[in-house]
Image (cartoon, rainbow, N blue to C red; front, top):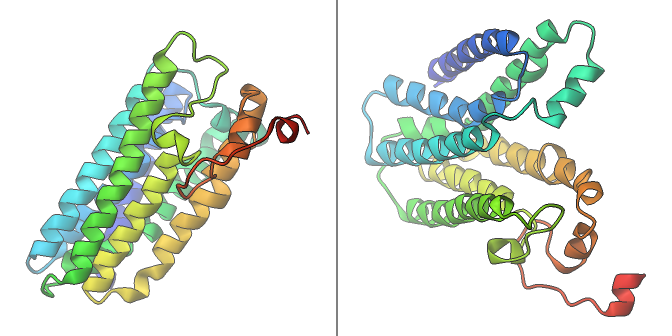
Length: 263
């Protein structure tokens, strides 16, 4: 299994270097966000091509990775189209001058490529194994569906909300956003644990570091923690939203009294 995994890293880094060259011409590294999910699709495709034969599970997992990756990449591309470089990357650029043009090769593109490669580990046994489908695969499909509904549904609802003329400075508190402040991140969480279940079903229980790493990134690094560190400044109503709505795992709305809200 080592060679397919290393070949996936080589393919991901090759795409990362090519994308970095494009970013030099654009003077904008933001489009790496559109590449993030595609890195996983690249890894999955390499695993599928190097499998002795593609099993029913392998075909299913490859299809689910493709659906997830292409949907997310298209959503981010459309959302960012025509926009200037994202504020997160402007901050990184500012903090790494002089020489950010070269540093971005490993700070941005290389780092994200390697992280994607590490997280893609469960896809290797899930796609290359020829073990028969079992009950864990059913659980994995159901969890994937829950994740996809939350991620794609949350993104769709937020896009519609932002398109409204009266949404500036306001907070979306309906739909999936009524039950969790980050339905899209929770959906991503479910999807990667579902891929791990596929891996376990094929004997790849040892790949648990992958969903743990993704969970850590979503909760503590580039997901919830990063977004909520600045969003309260941009949306004053967000403080009340925090009091009433679960941060990550969906749950019923909390009730806040007027005195509590003022304190």
